[in-house]
Image (cartoon, rainbow over all chains, first blue to last red; front, side, top):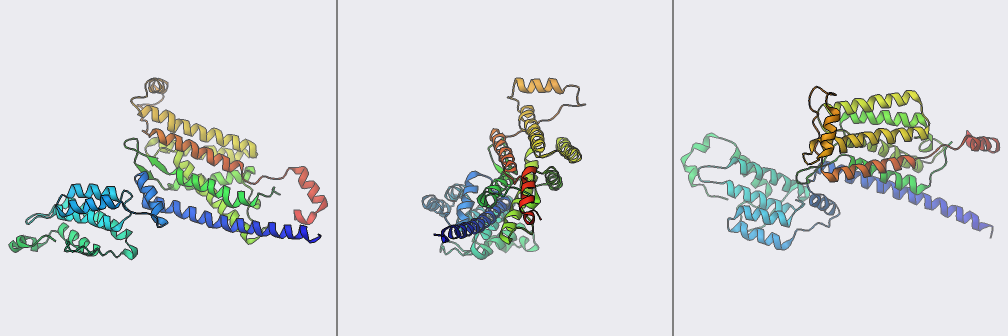
Length: 179
Length: 224
């Protein structure tokens, strides 16, 4: 019986250690979350919630809207495709959806004799986001209807479109196909 | 000597409160469309936070030996460090929350905080008086920022705007520009301020002098 108070005291001490360790882990995780929110700068509540879900691996794009986006994209209906992809990925956390949005800017801005700088710039911004969301920064989209399958190719193509070069005046460039 | 804090309060509750304040303090909600943005603490708020922690330590509201020291274990010191760091972050972001984002008013608010804290530091108030003083200072800043300036910027504010315009007439050489804020921003700022004050009340307190004398007489090694 005399050992009972001693055992209780030991259990109390162990419990206190556990509480403090758990508190430290909780505080570190919470602080990291706050810092990540300030770094990511979500613009809407959906983006904020999506960021939280993505950080715990629970974020999923809406498959119906994604498929609708793909259908619009393949029909060259680019603003409609972007709207559908934005609905599918409201938190802008899915690298593939962001890749298609960037690709839609490229295709919409591409012309035989003229590239739309505004659309290319928007595309570049989105493809950078896609690369940032991809694991290890490497994004490959195995879609046979595309001519560029990696975010790096798309990024380079968009960058090339924004730079004025002597080769832009080459008349043969008019024959270049859209990728 | 301080009253020992329950482990859960020191390890969970206080960091949770102060980190929430640190996170919410920089939240800005656009009056048009409700878009979010998160403002990191400007440098001046870091200076103000250091000054505020100094005032708290001087007044006995923040007792460093109650959170850190050789008499505590390594784990306890780690918990105490988290409380102090989160209190610092919360203080800096509370100033960010209560200060206008730009313009002359931002400078006026920062100077106001700076001089008030300096004055409080010189006055050496006790814990209770400092808590009351902080409620008044932060409460005043909240009312000006989220009620008065928001009303001045809101063309729909009606009689509130007219009243403020009449009150301020002649006080300045030109019209005072308000700062538009989303209605939700005022509620978030109020909750942030309330959480901060609750956190301050929950910080470790000094034992009453009589208790220290009894402990000193019965167990002098504890006091050492």
